[in-house]
Image (cartoon, rainbow, N blue to C red; front, side, top):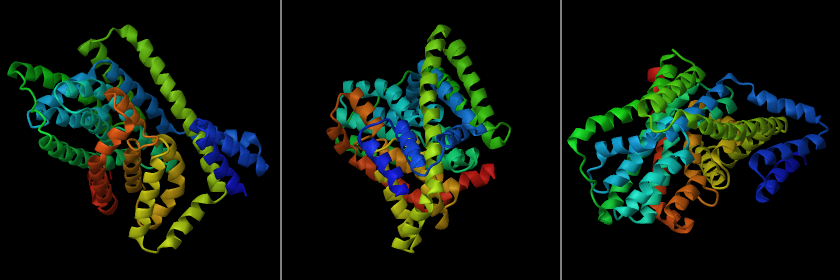
Length: 426
């Protein structure tokens, strides 16, 4: 009955479209009342969930992304990508994928990526003769790929939910799969562009290239500072994020100078709004996770999955299917916090280490970001492209196929994840 109250209340409120953070809180309190647990104990668990030093990196990552986004970094990354790969057939689509890879290394947010890069490239692609459904599909799939590229605040959320997994190892573990996924999306992009006979990119004047490359690399150096500081062990994740934010501030306001420093107030407002949602979500998820552990739900799920089949491959496939299905109805951050304490014990029981599982989890949920009915990135991209969700989803099918192939590679070839952490972090 106690498990039924916890999960039943959660599902009911979710169906009623109650905000996810309130859903987690109300279902935890309702179960606590049934178990005669003092509400103060649940509130203490919420506070305890925020009492993690690694979470201090999240405000800096969000602020750095907001500063660079406001300061025109997306336009410069698009120009840099155009210099690198824009001349081929469907070059502007290739630029879209590469720009999202670069932007993901700064913002770590698929929605921010779609909003920033997509607002520039989707209209530009349509103007140059690309179909709207193709432009939206390329944008949203590449934006989802961007969350794999470090630094990613979702990796930090997973680190906290998993009990303190190395942030540096997670960052490095996600880099190679993220690049492989970007390459796979480029292949699909090129094949479709060739079949539809989309135009090649326009040539860039040679005298403009040094400026474009210089400005683009200056922006990308934000990610280099953050990742390099963590991997080298010279900085903690929080210290690297703080230094990266300071660098982003200097580059945006004193080098690029596209916006006045008075815009910093607006940037801080947006940052605080985002943080208030993220931190409240982490707090309520901590209470919900504590209740799950108290009721031994993770153990029940683990025993249930293993009892279906003793085969490790089947168990891994079931974990993937569960995550993909959950990703269609919930956003990434709450799912990380809810699914990690339940599925991580199952994953470790079949030989998947916590870093490998974290990368697999993020990749599964990134696919959910572009999958109806709740795919937030798909909604944003479709709104920018003024395209019905149904039409965008149909064109996304080959991109889904590429992402699933990479997902299976990540799941069953652990060295794809472990190679860089073993080489650079351990």
